[in-house]
Length: 168
Image (tube, rainbow, N blue to C red):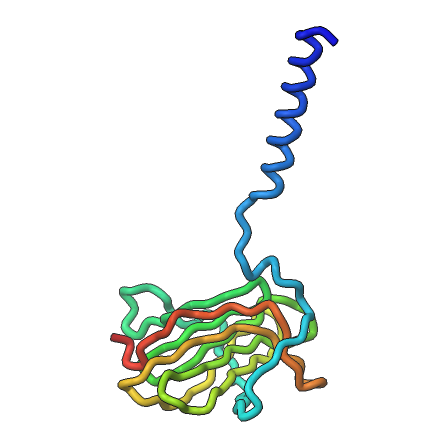
């Protein structure tokens, strides 16, 4: 084979490798790679609270300029949630019409049993749960899916950082 033929093959091979690498390294959230429907374990002493509906247009603000911002916004492609320190309110939103409910678990760094806020209002709906936490503690959110019919928890899962209950 001539040098010119080898050069054509090398260029074509490089172009193919570049094209394949473009597909392989496209930016994707880690949670988006989790297969939906795989069951996960939750603590046995978990307290489940069904969320009350948040009227459309009154969802919590995440902006720093908001009087009572919602912090720790955490999301997957199926559900999202955040924590409003003022009033100790957990918001959860169902983002996917899949027959499962959006769930936001709340864990503390001071030993309180875990609680989870479940929204069974349908895709696109936001719900809230009002709880009361120790103001000197921290909480962490876990966003996932729940099936009321089977009482089972499912991926995708996302975790927030630890959040101060007093919002400071």
